Image (cartoon, rainbow, N blue to C red; front, side, top):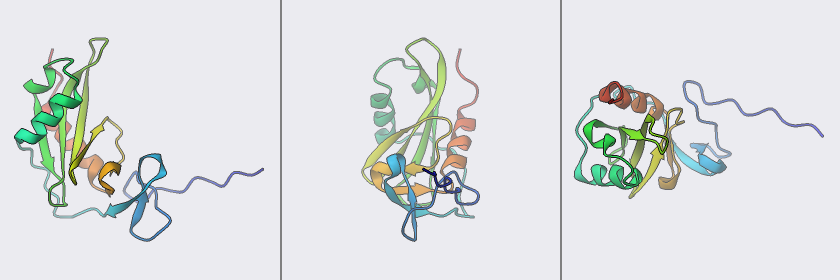
Length: 144
C-alpha cells in the first residue's frame, strides 16, 4: 500500500486546493469557495459591532469577561465577513488568544494557526490568517 503525498498548499496560503476550480478544502475536507488574496485588503482594526460582541460573548461560554476588556475586528475583503480577536481565559485560568470569523449568517471560532476557512459559510480566505494576526496585534498583550 502506498500513500500519495499530501497536496501542497496554495502558494502564500495555508489552504489546500479543492477538486474543482475555485475551491479549497475547508475543515473536515469540505469543499468551499476560495477568495484569493486582495491587494487592497485593509488591516485597520475597528470596534466590534453589537452582533459581533454578542457572538464573542456566546462563544466564550460566559467563562470570563476577559474578552470584553480587549477585543477588535477587521473586515475581510468580501462584503459582510470579518475576523474578531479577543482574549479568553481557559478553564485552567490561562489567558489565550481566540477569535471568530463572521459572515454568511454564520460564525466559526478561531484559534492561533487558523488556515482561513469559514467552512460553515462555505468560503475560505487567502488573507484570513494575516487578518487574524493583525486583529490579534490590535488587542495587544494579554491582560493580567
